[in-house]
Image (cartoon, rainbow, N blue to C red; front, side, top):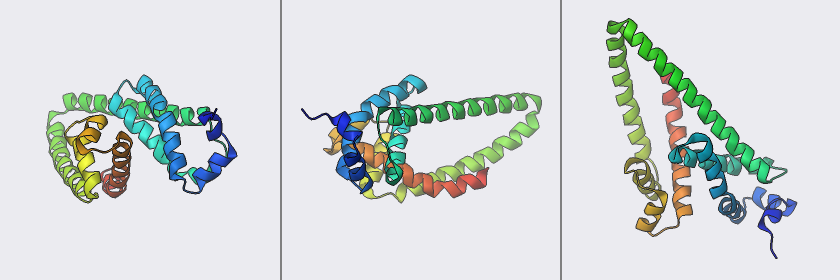
Length: 192
């Protein structure tokens, strides 16, 4: 009987993955996506953030596939756990900054109004940049991304509507997020 887990841990599979083996990556995705998603949901308590974390794990795995020397359960679960911990750390920082901002708003109302005006302008600029980066996506990627992130549809619902597989929807979203991050990176650095 064919043992997929044992095959994935074999050097033959790793060689195939390193040589741009899309089929190997698809097998890995198929075998582990749901398990990693379950783990991420446990940590984040948020299905959408959990999906994004797991998609980032697979994206990092694909981008770093040439450096992989050993691949097993613990490697993938550790990547996911670390992604979740980074997410939680980020959420903690955001919460702390929000609290500081709120406290400052109470202390100095005039400064709050000035900050709100600047924030409004930056928010409008960011929104414009996001719309531009969405418009720059390939047609199918843009369609899937808009249905997912703007219309709030689930990946399975999008797959059924467009008559494509859920995995294809996941891939379109992952690639769209990667492209948008690259386009928005410079703008976001200027905002800091």
